Length: 458
Ligand SMILES: [Zn+2]
Image 1 (cartoon, rainbow, N blue to C red):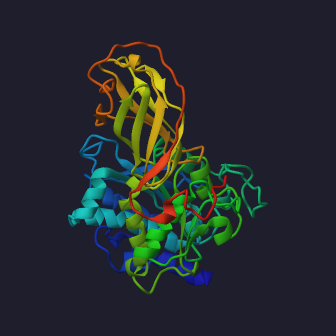
Image 2 (tube, protein in one colour; image 1 turned 120 degrees about the vertical axis):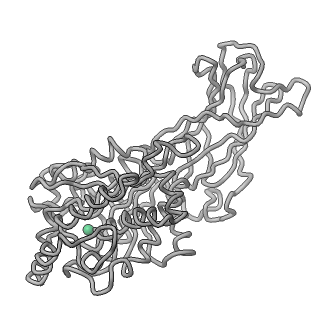
Image 3 (cartoon, protein in one colour; image 1 turned 30 degrees about the vertical axis):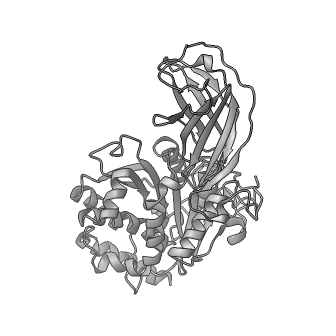
């Protein structure tokens, strides 16, 4: 088996100069990448598609090989057409050097968007004008080229992350968290380049399954609604691939990039395991055909990345006497548990902040607070401050509500909340009346916290 694999890898090396990244051929479609062929292909992409491919390195392996990151977006604009920040997707492959099919899924995902752009595929164009896709194709290049799970120090890189490191007495987790160059570089890339990501997929080979957190404990993650919502949509429309929490779907594990990505970075994270063998040097069936269903799932996850967080807007604000009522809609598929409405004066100073409130995934909520209207000023603004997801590590967002509609019909004393008013720095927070679900955007019962069968667990 090993002799066959090495033979195949050598053959791939010999064929490397003929590889054309931009046009699938027999070599690329049937032989797994070596570090050498990957280097040729990603550089060919960067040369051929400079408008959308920004090639960089996240660091080096223990043996000094580059950790190539293919960054794909319409780089002619730093933002979406409406001026807002682009969504960010992070993908890595090849933690385990003998899991070639998973590495190829990372490569093919990048290729789909690059070649789709070249072909003017409308959905690919839409995605690349609104999204940055960062793909670190082969994390364990040293292990890949000798067809071994471990890195060159005989460490399991997917047990080497600084999240409950080695709590399950793992096999070869390294001498300590981030003892290995590959995992340390990956974590630095996550923390410094893509900390805003709203999707992280780490690709492996073995059992055909998608695993969401946790590996460390059997409990469902606190953002279970998001993961279950994705599972429902994948199963209804795309694939019957099992989607489970890792601890129960596979086995308990600790120090994985998945648990780190969710627990430390706050990303919605999946381990994507492609099917079966870990030893053949190539695939009889073409890789794009063999991984077609997996690519469909990846396209769904990437196309809809906008939904993988809470996305609140204030749709209406009404002041009745000293009661302020806000209609808040969550357009995203993740619940947020600590939102607050803020009023800022013209200098940007927060003059008032509401008590914290929850807005469930894909719901709208009416919240009422006592409010002293004498703090209103002519150029004040309303902000929403909240976490993207419930997990403690989720990123906070603070967004000005520019389009909020104002309601003054209720009583004679009502007043519009912008445009006039006497500024007074006195601020007051008196009471929080309540939260009620009034609308379910997608009308899907399973996403209602109130209706859910499973309790939220830490
Ligand atoms: Zn693996």
